[in-house]
Length: 210
Image (cartoon, rainbow, N blue to C red; front, side):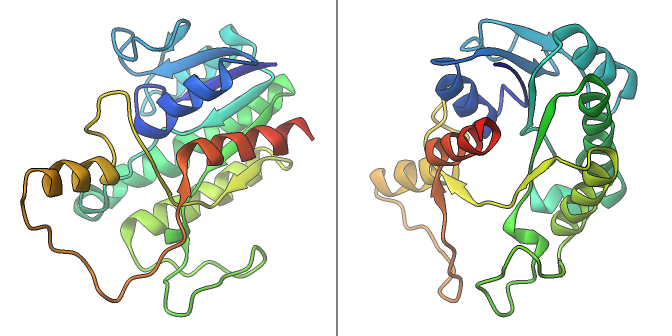
């Protein structure tokens, strides 16, 4: 299959390119064509420019669009929720609509932050309850995606792993700081079931192929 992977220069997108390239024709969507050297095929588009997103899907003609790109920094989302809503919700809906028009499958990588975390062990059919700007924009993204592409797959996940740069993931931050002998403060009342990033990509691949 031909996969279009948004955010191919980022942590999840880069891992998706690497994992999926072994068995599929993969094209990475990036804002700057000079980034993501690990991606052999690339197309440039900007999440804030609707026409470039639609044009990219039209040019690539993918069988699957895996939407990894987004505004993921919680502090940045809180500082400018309007911008985060444009990136995480509106742009996602545009991409999903373009995929639907082409007849391509669409996977939206969401987050466990669509839930407040007050209880835990949430099920798929529970109402979302975000209590952060990031969570609200991702929950809105789920809605816009499903409105534009009724059969889209929503992956609510939390993941860890290694990035090509060695500086893009939380795991790498802790390994680097602790390896240097630095003390790293952390939460003592926070529990999460994270998945290794390669397992996330492989699970998405299995769902799409089924």
